[in-house]
Image (cartoon, rainbow, N blue to C red):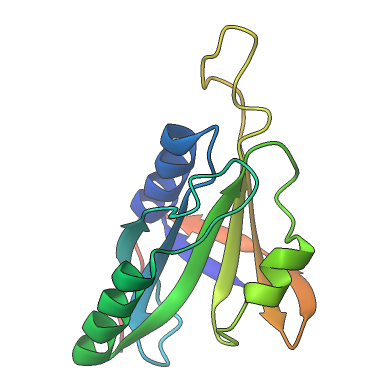
Amino acid sequence: MLTIARATYDAIVAHALRDHPDEACGVVAGPEGSDRPERFVEMVNAAGSPTFYEFDSTDLFQLYKEMDANGEEPVVVYHSHTATEAYPSRTDIGLASEPNAHYVLVSTRDSFTDGGNNDGPVEFRSYRIVDGEVTEEEVTVVDELPPSN
């Protein structure tokens, strides 16, 4: 199960809506081994595509250096789908290289009505992807994460 703070959930959704019609992507880092998504890191989709996302390699390298220095790991890896449901594509599954991460997908396909407004719903779903196997998990949004031990 993914437990995520409302502010982080809102930031992920806002990023997905803002980048629509291109896919948005990013990471939420947290202390190693904690399963606590604490530090929201919005990334640039280097592909600039409505059907594919790619982290900028320089930005990703810098993020991993920061996480290493801070004793963090990627707890959530997120991206959006702009025209399809929030379910990992074959490409998404192939790119999933963090066995401990929650892979969050946000679909913005129903968010933009005829007038172009982002007033429709988004679909926010989370998965574990290990060795090519996809398992959907429950998402719980809380006002704030409980204190860590």
